Amino acid sequence: MTTRTAKATQVYEGGCLCGAIRYRATAAPVRCVICHCSMCRKHSGGPALAFVHFPAEAFLWTRGEPTRYRSSAFAERGFCSQCGSTLSMHERVLKDRVQVAVGTLDDAARVQPDDHVWTQDQLPWLRLDDDLPKFARNSSAVPSEAADD
Image 1 (tube, rainbow, N blue to C red):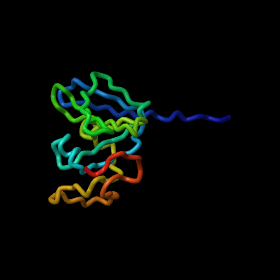
Image 2 (spheres, helix red, strand yellow):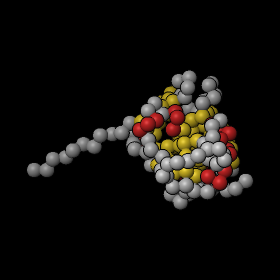
Image 3 (spheres, rainbow, N blue to C red):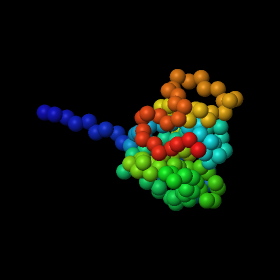
């Protein structure tokens, strides 16, 4: 007799500051990256921006959806039009996933970053003392259309 153990579904939930937008992911993250590029800094208002990638088929906006701003020919950035919270990144080459800002997760401590990207743009006063891989531009882990501007 064979017994099957049901794998518990991992659920990650989050949303914007005012609560107008909420989301749910029902699969483990594909990856998590901390980006130091100037566009991510401007989008977030912080010295870097961490995004967690969830499989698109396991992701749902449960209340509202972000307003999108086309930040380049290959990507759009999502934000709440009511409170301004940075929410998401939508890259043409990564249509199989949804990237959400780690800080929007209800329990951000559940995800662990995989690497730092665009460290060539890192602010000189920001010290990275973790053991994560650091890439001057894009990580070799995912395709990207991003280029130097």
